[in-house]
Image (cartoon, rainbow, N blue to C red; front, side, top):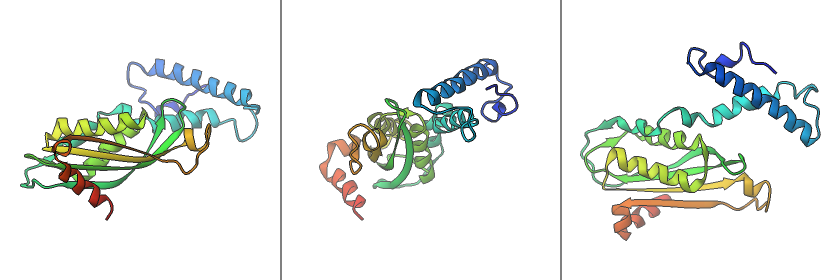
Length: 206
């Protein structure tokens, strides 16, 4: 399957690496056809003929985070005098397990205690989204979020908790459909003072 007019929808055809990306895209779509055959179906039957392109387009959407620096969302700050906990909870995200390319999804809870500056609440959600839209493991995702908050905002402390379901565990392999995974990362005052961590955790229950 050759991409002609469709491919500029996915990548700019004015960039120097466009011909290389076009070649890679065609190799990928040929491989998807081979995969369909390997699984036992006919890639040329009605319903599957456009699947290689759809899969390519979907994966480029799943991995949009590689085409940005998520930390940049935090650069918009405000001079507001506030040195108490700010918590944004239940930030929904979808990501791809880098081991099986199977989805994992859930919510992130991000809290910080400002030092000098605060950022917009939506910027924290965009930060989570930027790192989630990559090939990931939950542990790395958790740490990338907390480290970005620390680097850009330089708060008194940051705490991140992620709760997620992994289809590589729930939908295949061991097939434990009710299993979920929780990871956390703490920095600064959250690591040093148990009462501050307790405040964060108590607010999650409300």
